[in-house]
Amino acid sequence: MADGKVGTNLTRHIYQKQMEHPEATGELTGILNQVAFAAKIVSREVNKAGLVEILGLTGMENVQGEEVQKLDDFANEVFINILGKSGHFCIIATEEEAEAITVPEGYKRGNYSIALDPLDGSSNIDFNIAIGTIFSVHRRVTEDEGEGEQDLMQPGRKIIAAGYVLYGSSTMLVVSTGDGVHGFTLDPSVGEFLQSHTDIQIPDKGNIYSINEGNYPYWTTGVRKYIDFLKEKDKASGRPYSGRYIGSMVADMHRTLLKGGIFMYPADKKDPKKPGGKLRLLYECAPFAFLVAHAGGAASTGTGPVLDVVPEDLHQRVPFFAGSKHDVSQVEWFVGKYDEDKE
Ligand code: AHG
Ligand code: MN
Ligand code: MN
Image 1 (tube, rainbow, N blue to C red):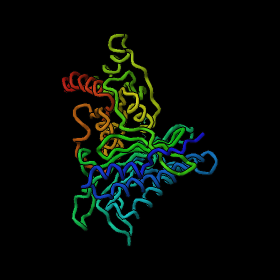
Image 2: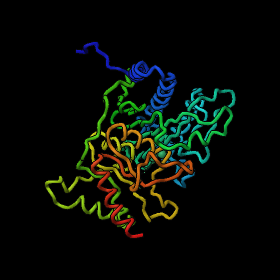
Image 3: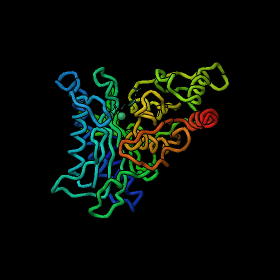
Image 4: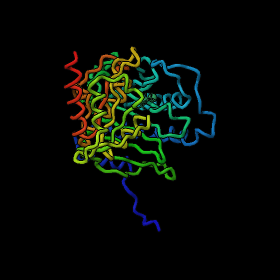
């Protein structure tokens, strides 16, 4: 029997946060509502992807040289359209666009920039495996008509809001504006994101490691030794760890946020064009580093905090190790001991 009690929805949650921070401009409420609006539209398509002609490849390649899935394209268009016309942003960067996108003629340039991975986990789209969207919001730093790229090229320390959408068995929006990490689950019957997780905290130490073991031959010595270490039998330290790898960063990081452990995409020697690993700083690593930090965890390049990396290129890649503080500091020890000594 429904008790008539309705949980907090995204709008009320942000509004309550805003009341606690009178200095906030109120724009964050609008920004997150626009992200949620776009997420609902993408969620609708994801949930019927198997039924309409939206699966498969577009036959095009993106700036990453990767084949573009139709759903990648659709999600990219939806977020650019909705956010570009929202009046909140002066510039937008997405994984699917080589250059940053300026605000269309006739629409207000706002006080924020946003970097997006519109559809994360593309290789899983056709197999009904969880995929997602990742976003990261900075305050504008250029004056009125600045060219805008600098508004995007800011370190993760300066992020003012970041989050992800997980299109899984249910659609979830997990977000932080710097005051805790909170989760909202979409109730499609009312079209609202209702709060389902409050102040997510990562356990200090986990017992799950998440990495693509197929790249083992290409890793540095330190990473190989760390993974070998996790597989040794040592009851006192909870080893061997369990291996879990979905191949969608959003899904692997969502589990890491909730259960602890460590997710890794190290630099590898597999593709000379990608010396810094596969994951992009602006719209994959920095937003997740921000979320992990506000959930009591850590995110490292292996030699230092991801949040301190100053971007040099929109699509710059960095090695990424994130999750429980204990586990991240342990992999940093192995990298420091075996990789630096080898130089
Ligand atoms: P995207 O689909 O946005 O290109 O991201 C895919 C990324 C990330 O989601 C995932 O963690 C990683 O690629 C998996 O890479 P491998 O298949 O090389 O393990
Ligand atoms: Mn991605
Ligand atoms: Mn993507």
